[in-house]
Length: 497
Image 1 (cartoon, rainbow, N blue to C red):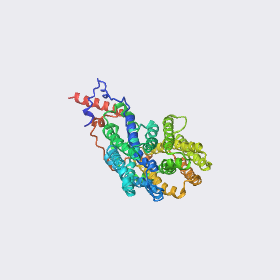
Image 2 (cartoon, rainbow, N blue to C red):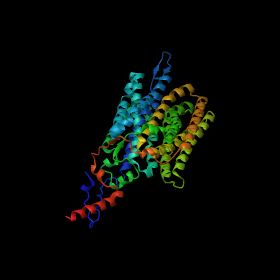
Image 3 (cartoon, rainbow, N blue to C red):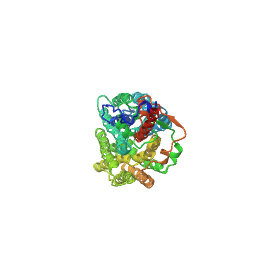
Image 4 (cartoon, rainbow, N blue to C red):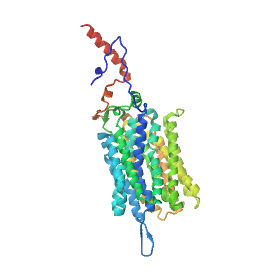
């Protein structure tokens, strides 16, 4: 199908206008996609977090002396936390190639349904024994891989370059929404007559419904979506390269780029700092600060809600604060985010025993500050890697998984009795890691697209365009004068006969 099938240009007639579509979302389909993706990723992450809270209220056994024995000992708890990371590492291996071959729609839906089934089977696995729930946790981790990779794929296709900051910020809000939803919900079921098992059935069912809706509405590219108008399509494709084709990912070239390496190094510190509270927040509030189980759920969730609000405000500022350069904005948000976290860790380490309110404020401030990393490190990764963001985000997922894998053993070794002094040492160490890793990022940070995003690789997989195929043949606006001139010449040649 060529351009000639759409245009018959006459020197006496104006160029026919491009047909405007009537869409139900008024040139804002990308934001509907955004909300749907946030919902799905929130539920997948929440499915892995539920055990972090319900493990507190799972009933154990009682020995002959009447002493309560926990269902899982500390070593087993460490393995249950680490199993998610192991599964995530396994899931990361094929994810980039799967996204390239089959697209985000099919792969993300498959991973989401795997998470849903594993969550529904969790209560049964707990009753069957440790090794059964260990396998279920690994399966949940396998499905969790999708969140980072999907963030890259969705941002690359559905975010405009000029507003990528707010899109990345909002898309990463699933990191805050998941604990906001999971922790209070788990706490409510723990103290209810239904019991802790109810939260798994609720979340598993919601996950199935969310991904069914996702599969129905989502499309891998804006060109394939019937609700994307020509105006919105123009915004989404402005300044982007490689449209209408799937390029082979230049893995080695990306891994050699110093800016991309800088974002990965920065995320080492950021992920450790984020995961220490995500995984051990309920334990720290309950065992060290002395909050009861019912209050712990709300106290754990509030900081994540505040982090979401900060993201909503920081994203537009990152895109529109043209008074300073783009690179300066990336560095500024990184320093504010990671610097605040480091300061909070120092205060927590020096905090005297009994200062519950101050301890919670520092805990909350660290989580709120962590949310700004999305408009610093993550946005830098998007601006540099462009269409190859999926692979870059997959490495972020690997780093995050390694943090989750290592932390349980590190914490169990450093904090055997959950005392304030033991946690102080942990906070000092994490503070040092955060400062060192982000200092390197600030040195190598850059805000322009890498050269390897502009050079077409030798081997290309042509994208199948079955839906809205007509869009592939629409001429670009910049080509319109040339097409018009060619049309006039053709008609002039015909008139000679």
